[in-house]
Length: 545
Ligand SMILES: Cc1cc2nc3c(=O)[nH]c(=O)nc-3n(C[C@H](O)[C@H](O)[C@H](O)COP(=O)(O)OP(=O)(O)OC[C@H]3O[C@@H](n4cnc5c(N)ncnc54)[C@H](O)[C@@H]3O)c2cc1C
Image (cartoon, rainbow, N blue to C red):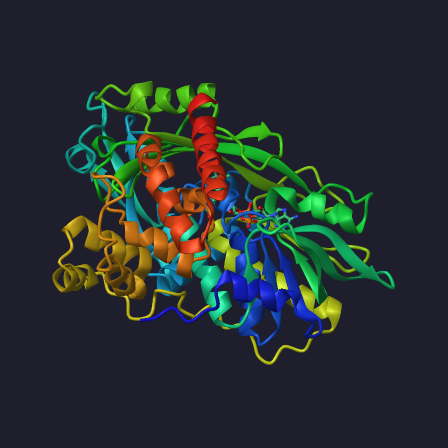
C-alpha cells in the first residue's frame, strides 16, 4: 500500500495560498488537536491543523500508554458515590473498544495482575474489577478473575514471593501513543485536512470582535504568515491558557499542570505479555509495570509542576519509582538499571464558567471565549475522539458552519489499520528476508504500510540503527518522507521510540539518523550539526536532570 497524503512542503504551500478561509483551524497537534482535525475533516469541513513542535511532542508521547476506563477513577466513583465519575469510566471503556478496533496495529488488549498480600484485600479488588467489567458491558475485553499465588508468580516470576496470597487479573488496552498520534494526523491529512508541524501560532486574527484565524511562524523557514478561518479550536494541552490570553489577556486560567514520570527498565523486569499494577504507593496512588517494546515501562507519579515544553524526570522522582518496584520484587533493582526516564505534564482542567472550580477533574471542558475561540482541554488519551466530537460540535455552532455529514471517526480505520493482520509479520519475514524481531516490529508499527518500509529497506537501507534493536535505517527515511519527521529528535523520540526506551542506544544511533535525514531533506552541514546538537541536548537533559 502506498502513502497517499501530501508531504509537509505541499501542506505549508496550501496553508499559504489564498483560497479563502478554512472552516476550522486547529491549534496543537497532540492527541486532542489531531483528533479534532480528523473529526472535522470527516464531516466534510475544510480543516487546517498547526503544531508548533513535532506532532505528539507534548504530553501525548509521554503517557502510560494504557487505553483504559481508569480503575483509579472507578475507586473514586465508588468511594464518593459519584455518578459523573461512573459515566466517565463507562464512556472511556466504550472508547477503549473503539480504539482497539480502529487501530489494531498500534494497540492490543493487555492482561494486568494486581498482586495481593492480604486475604482481606481480595474481595475488595475483585468486586471493583467485576464492576469495571460490568460498566464496560459489551465493550468488555475479558472477564476479571482471581489468580492464586502460583499463577500470579507464573505470570510475573520476579514478584515478591513471601506472603503473596494471589492476585486479581483484569484486562485493559495498551498502545503506542506517539505513533497513534501521528496515525491520527496522517488519517486527517488523507481525509483532506491540511496538517503541518513546526508552525507556531503567535497571535490570533480578530475582526469585528470575532476570532478569524491566526498568525503563524514557520519554525523551519522563519516565515510568518496568516491563516484565515471561520472557527479556531485551541487544543494546546498544558499551554491552553497562553493561547486563550491571545484572545483575552484577562482570561481566567483553566489549566494547571501536574507532572508524571516514567522510567524504563530492561525486559528482565516484566514478562512479555502481562502487566502489573501496584495498588498502593506511599502517596496513595497506583503504579504500573508494563511490557513495552521489549522493555519494562514503570510509572507514574503526580506532582504539581511548572508549565514548560521539556519537563524533566528528577532524581527524587526516579528514586520514588524504584523504591516501589523494589518493595514488590524479589530481584534487586538499581539506578543503573534505568535505561530511560521522561516526564509529561497532565493538563488538569477546570471550567472557568462553572460555579465550583475547586475540584479538578480528569474530564474535559469545552470553553468558548469572548471572541469565539473554542478551547478543548483535559480528558485523557483514551477519550481524545469523544473530546474531538464535542469540540467540533461547538465550533460548528459558534461559527455557523455547515458540515456535509456526521463525524465518521467511530468506525474509520486509522492509517495502517486497513488489512492489518497480526500474522502479517510472518509474510513480511518471508517476502523480504527479514529477521523475526524486525518483521514483527514493522508489522505492528506501520500496519498495512509495513511492506512499503521493508521495500525501502531493500534500497541499501536494511541495516539496523543499533545492533540490539529492531529499528532499520529505512524507517528514518520513511519517517521523513511520509510521516512528517523533520529532526533527529522527531525520529528517535516519536517515530521510533528508541530515545524513550534506551538513552544510550539512542546516543549511539543519533549520528547516523542525522546523516540519513540530512540526505533525505537536503540539509546542509550547519543544519545537520544543529540537528545533532538538539538531540544530544535532549538526551543530556534526561541524563543530568
Ligand atoms: C504521566 C502521564 C501519563 C498518562 N497516561 C495516560 C494513559 O495511560 N492513558 C490515557 O488515556 N491518558 C493518559 N494520560 C493523559 C493523556 O496523555 C493526555 O490527556 C493527552 O495526551 C493530552 O493531549 P493534548 O493533545 O491535549 O495535549 P498535548 O499532547 O500536550 O498537545 C498539545 C500540543 O499543543 C502544542 N502547542 C502549544 N502551544 C502552541 C502554539 N502556540 N501553536 C501551535 N501549537 C502549540 C504543543 O506543542 C503540544 O504538542 C497521561 C498523562 C500523563 C502526563
